Length: 165
Image (cartoon, rainbow, N blue to C red):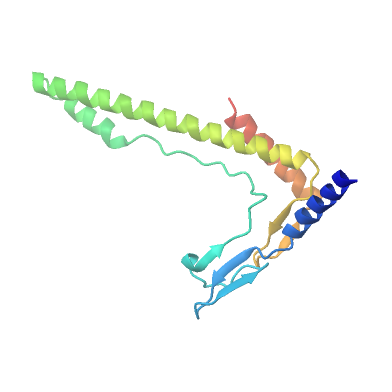
């Protein structure tokens, strides 16, 4: 009996937590406002004190920039000078370029791993069958339909195929 009343109490507390205001901001008068809708447009980001938790975010693939071309052109111009100082400078530039390339590859691998992890999490959530809400342009929550879910599943699988190596 005691266990069931404790479970009921926990269930009620869990359900009640969803009814709380999700947005908190200071208006132009400096008063704190609470609402389940976003603040009016034009409210400075610094005045938004609390946002609702993000439950669903579409998969975003981020590309990492390529290595700097100026290092390659500097190495090429140093190659045209045959004197010992120029050769030493050329070796130094080649080493710097190789180090930059290695660092770029490391960052790209880390970004791919993050994209992979994110896409796998999104796919798992999409395939779980749970209802997924997004906010439209007005900040109102909408539930995605089966067609949108299928498109997101296909997109997540494509990201997994390209990013998870």
